[in-house]
Length: 373
Image (cartoon, rainbow, N blue to C red; front, top):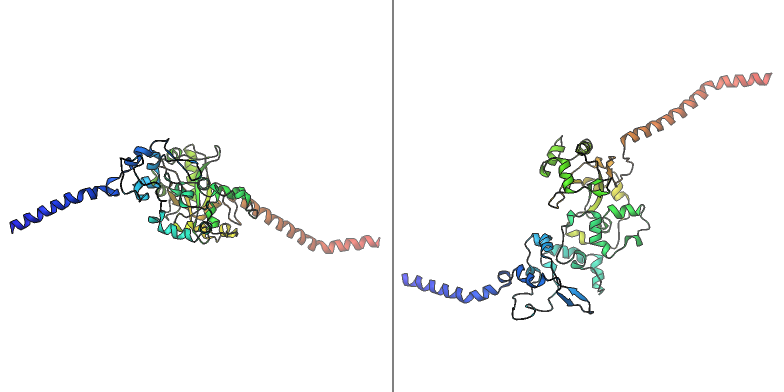
């Protein structure tokens, strides 16, 4: 029996020795990002494109590490899956040319939504300039979309191909909409949207930096909601919102909150339609679904922008800019003054009519006396 087990052990060792070269040649075992960067960290590395243009093959290691893929430990060969091994004896140690990266290997839901979009329709027509994953998102330095402001999103995506000023003639206040409303809000039908209130310094015309926000708040971000939400309902209401503004002022930060409307970040946002929503009430009506998704956003030093739920009433605050709800104004005092003016006008008109009615007999008698003379 003992000899039998010894024989099995010897066979197992021999099998591992024989299989080791095969196992070590597998891309997921053998090829590290550092292997690729031995060549691709050279900023002079290029190739010639199909039309004779020069294409850079340089990859900035620090930028890649800060990207979505880098932060999630995605390797080069996870995307460039046709590289199975490197042949160091060749000038180019991998197949040339490489196959186009198939993003649907990981992002199948996004691919499915894209296939139902106007962008996919253009691609099916054979347009060489049709939108692709890399065409919109870039190659190696893809950033978390949720941490970008609307202007940053538009510059990174839609406006790389589209100039909104060349259309949208039907849209009132076009410039404001282009500044604070993401294209996908109107161009992805039946999709969730969010109103975000970002700390904005009206004096400098810039968003408040993470360092400024942290100093002004005086508490860690994970304790912010607990400190400001006095009634414990999980949302910042109008009174608590004004208390926040007051607390910031006491710390020397006089700021407002700039309202932005962005599409929720999920796969369905890729289903871009050729037909846009042109109903203003979809956002600006008091009954709009979007008013159930209002958040205050505060930047952190890590580059994140955590969101804190807020009641839709805060959008009527004087300190919440660039978002208007029909029939609302931004100042309660002005509302009261306006109401008094209206009531005063009604009272004056009503009082004047009442006095004329009561004095009508006296005026008739006076008129008769003057005619008798």
